[in-house]
Image 1 (cartoon, rainbow, N blue to C red):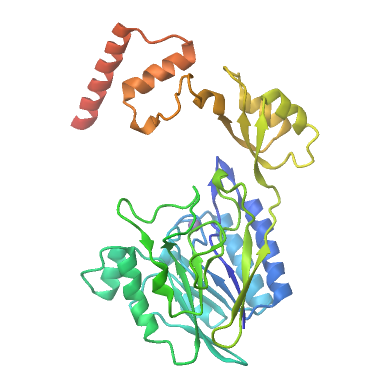
Image 2 (spheres, rainbow, N blue to C red):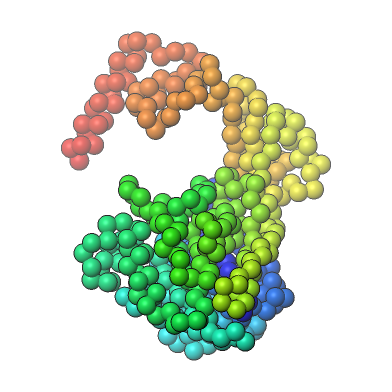
Length: 382
Ligand SMILES: [Mn+2]
């Protein structure tokens, strides 16, 4: 049996103020083309279909179009789950009706996970679509008080699933989770505030393949066939070196699994350019890929007036500028100083130095400290 695995489409995502819908539509056309070429028996979408629980209308239209192409035109069953970015109930609207047409969507957490069973020459494959849920949601759905963390919550959900696997049949899990040991990027939203959201890979021992969503780098985790498909596009500058892909899975007789990554090529790449602003602008004028989304890592020292305006003359879709020189030792923002841990008055003194080139004098520092204290008191009283 052949399965095509994808995840983390994040339809409707806006990055540095730019809507990525055109990019997403371009790569989804490729995905549909891959499905038409490889003719999988089912497509697995492991969550974060949308970027947020109330997606923009254009994102809904794009998903509608894509699923229609896959399920109606190509006649390939699609099995999708909600991720932590999706609104589970909204995503699952009409799911009982759609199931009959070949589209399985699982949103809200259920105590019992109904599998989708498919047949091939080697027998049955049971595919269990398990949508994302945080521990309180799982406690409520399963009516269990314990389950302190994500690991315990997932283990409890899997115990129902393990009990359903028939002897000899192959079992596939579709889930959205942070598996310990997986490589993270900056575009995943943490699953828990404080505490650990990681689950252990040992939970997946009973499955022939685990199709995961959440981590945006395509990767296998641990020795078991546990894989992240990765996101549709590079969704942060921490993913510049990544080749995004969909995963093609061949399930042979029980115990035989092979996988292959099928590359996805963006219309406009997300990449970095380095050097002096003037040199970058000069090179950009000759760059055939000057429509790419650019992070410019400038080596210029000192202030530059309207750096972004100048950069966009050569690279109209430039998104951001990084000034390494301003972060270096001996400069205003000394290396090793984390601005999030600095006092407001020290941040102001740094800002003053950067703008004026002068150190804030002692009596001026006192005035700033007084104002900051007054603001804090005012905020506390509100
Ligand atoms: Mn995601």
